[in-house]
Length: 226
Image (cartoon, rainbow, N blue to C red; front, side):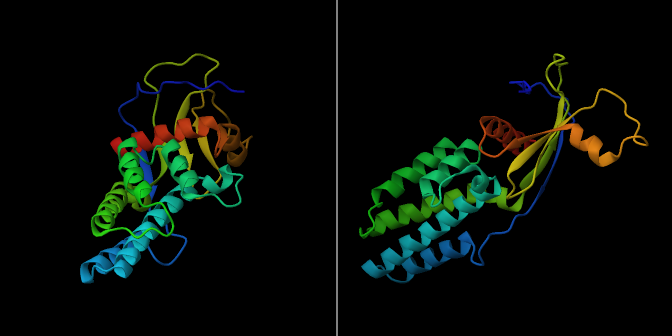
């Protein structure tokens, strides 16, 4: 196994990244479901509308979480035929998408009304809507600016047995990330075709592997702080 550096915090200051919008896998968006939830509770506060409001807010939450998890490779990483919400949210956390603070707020409100036949009261419903709205606001950047690559140069020279990674590439809804290795040697592209050259100079890590989460969390942190 090729050893990987554990600290890439010392960078050439001229890093760059690119991003693109990703689409939801269904026609209705989380924001639409959240708007339904708000309309339900604003128009009338009966048991029926409270249940409907809470259910629509829950749909908004689940759709956002599942979309993000799948965009970051969840389907390729899991062996479960019927994954649940906790599987999706745990995966997002491992990818660096969900912060512990947001997760704590989310679990606190959601666990209070987890029972399937429980009717939430007005306060519980409003709290849940507020937390879901906060979650969407915090994670919409991954929908509208999904990180495709992050290019950089390490600031310190690495040992010979450690590859000089110069960029991280990710395709949404794929099964891997690609680490592109900075080539120390000059190659004659007339002798060697460009496609095989690029393939030889990269390292692929499959979704779900421990190093996948290490590099992906790193990429997420750097892209949105740059």
